[in-house]
Image (cartoon, rainbow, N blue to C red; front, side, top):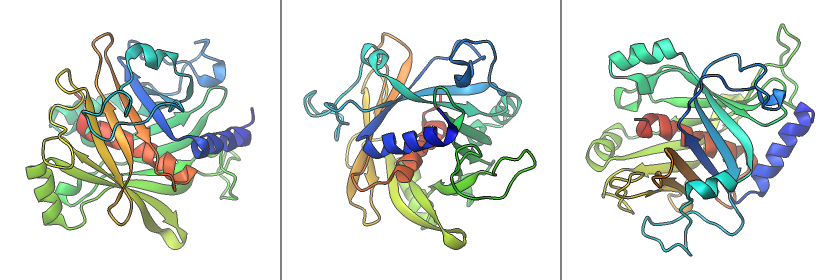
Amino acid sequence: MSDLHTAAAIDQQLGQARGLVIHQRLQVSATVPRPSDGGRGASSLPYTPQGTYKVHRLPHDKQARKHPTDEADVGWTPTSAELDTLESFMVVHEESSLGLHIMLAMFGCRKLRPLRFHFMVDGGGDVFLAKRHFRTSGFWCCPMHLDVSTTPNQSTTTGQQSTTGQQNPVRFGRVRENFDGYLKRCYQMCCLCTSYTDIDRLLPYDKYETRFTLRTNFCSCGRVNNCCAGTAITRNGIFDILDPHGDIVGYLQLVGSDGHEFSRAFVLEFPVESTPEDRALLLTALFQIQVAFLEP
């Protein structure tokens, strides 16, 4: 499948999907086969992934929970066995420096490390690329954000040619830590364990439009009680996706391990009016949350 056909297929699949299921298992090998090698393991990626995630389409008969205590017929809590049966259509690798990771950990700030997320499909290279530079976070007046671009081989837009003959990445949006109203956000984060992440689409003249906001809370303060979410005490945590008016239009469900295997999963239910680009950004926001709040 050509790069352009791969990109179009991913856009179509994101546009048709009601949601996604994303999960990470304990990584036992630092060498990951290239998707283009068909998983034969003859060669490896040009970097050592610090984290690998599988992305699946949400089954048509399943939906994300809207409350941690929803009944099984209302919302889905996937088991390890059910995750194994899902067909993967995308793999996400985190590229970051292990040495820098260790150095920042010594200073207690490894979650702020610069990194890249490679969104890949079998039989092809990167479809999307999310890049984050080192920033001290919104609490220190330097909000973290991930710039999301189509990769050189996937872009259908005429762009500046690079020295290798490929087009440079074309940025189409970003995922940004929302600290607008600094004192209010500090109070919400420190006292209510609540944070906000904006999904911004790029407009002409390098301006942005906020399409959605992901609201995450990790205690009993909020619409739902997410205290101990993602653990053996409370497997499910529910985070709300808000539109620009503050109305709930989608859900991100955190699912802890069921005890059979070390794993963490997410069930992402898209807003109905979201575009494929919005959905790619919402998927990226999940990884921003994972790194900032859920890494051990």
